[in-house]
Amino acid sequence: MFLFWFECDVKWGIALFSSFPSKIRVFDTTLRDGEQTPGVSLTPENKLRIAQRLDELGVDVIEAGFAAVSDGEMEAVKLIAAQGLKAEICSAARGTRGDIDAVAKSGADSIHLIIPVSDLHIEFKLKKTREQVLQITRDMVKHAKAQGLIVELSAEDATRADVAYLKKMFTIGIEAGADRVVACDTVGVLTPERSYELFADLRKALKVPVVSVHCHNDFGMAVANTIAALRAGANQFHATINGLGERAGNASLEEIVVSLISLYKLKLGIKTQQLYSISQLVSRLTGVYVQPNKAIVGENAFTHESGIHTQGMLAHPSTYEPIAPELVGGTRRLAAGKHAGSAGLKAALAGMGLAPSEEQLKEIFQRVKSVGDKGKTVTDADLLAIAESVLGLSVVKPIQLLEITVVSGNTVTATASVRLKLNGKEVSSAAIGVGPVDAAINAVKKAIAEVEPIHLEQYNVKAITGGTDAMVEVMVRMRKGDRTATAMGVREDIVMASMDAVLGCMNVLTTDYNNKGK
Ligand SMILES: [Zn+2]
Image 1 (tube, rainbow, N blue to C red):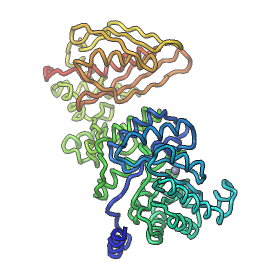
Image 2: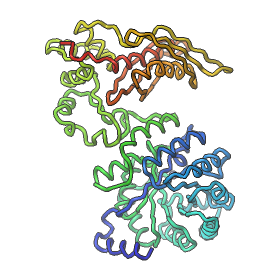
Image 3: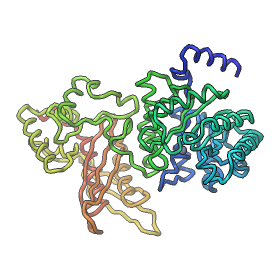
Image 4: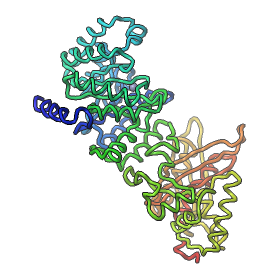
């Protein structure tokens, strides 16, 4: 410990708080603060699935839940703590003996001990005085330490608190044994400038190995505020996958990590290649969609449609791509929309093994534009269909649906059986699912899995018109190796719309004309 301080003092003396700490710890709170997103509730099993992926990703701390809140939360923390993961497992707690004892019982390594510090919270929420809160801090830190827990003392609403009082509260906590402190921007009111000032001040005033930052995104500045705090000397940040969290969410883990690595050239022990897939998993299990234009992991983050951009991209990816998709496990996609240029379409068609002549390409280009001008999304399946028609190719699809039966209801497990023609050969399969659509897709995937390992990356559904007989539009994106494709299905029947989309997409991915189109 002495050595640590000596090193830091020397470094600060030179850098004067203007550089990043040499080691930055990543505290993930997807399963606690992220789960507090309205409408989100994860089962212990699903929390475990996410925790395992977070551990592989390489985060230092996984806040698994709030042990005292419910039996399910206790079970989740217990389950995750019992896995022997590399990451430290933490549980949140309020400043009460009951909450702390629950954390100790859960088997977690550490406690995120949350104590309000703004007068607003002390007066109206706790109905206590500042002095009483200091006493609570002292007693509760000691109590948690006596249970053998690593204590991360958390000042709630720290950014609206009197700074002198905040420092006093932290100092008392550190004297009582707190191992780390975290100042929370609970309502997201920091600016990067204020964040830098506050954390430089805290770092200077507090003798504690870890000062952490916890930001919310109410003004869209959570990532910037987190980075400013780290630059001021904070050496741990709290964040969530996809920026999940209450109201506008928490600081997004993937955005902070990739910014620190790409823009500030720092080294973090995070396996960034896993960010895209973990983002998808969290989105699927929480039911919270990732907005398409979300930085780093959004569907459009590496998609290019406009002709000018696509042309540049094909000449050299760096022209319009600040982050290589491989860095985060994403895939570059050239979309075939009405903004696409002929170079982009040519590249997309080449991916399907098609090499149209200049004349043919011009015709395909015109048809794609006219579909787009009618306000319709041009999927890869549409592009293939247009190209096949222009090139006069036979349209026998590699995969054809011969028969599908789906059973669902309140007393049966949704089950589907399918019969398909795959490259002229008949295959059949049956599968179960959480509902009829899931069962149907599972059955198709199973039937063709041996021949074609194709993964469903995204499934979106919307009702185009109102009423129970509404037209349903299903859009899917699937991946085979490093190739992805999109397709759409529109019908009154959601299962059939899904089948159209999934089989359409699979057909694009299994079609390889091997340049026979010439
Ligand atoms: Zn929070």
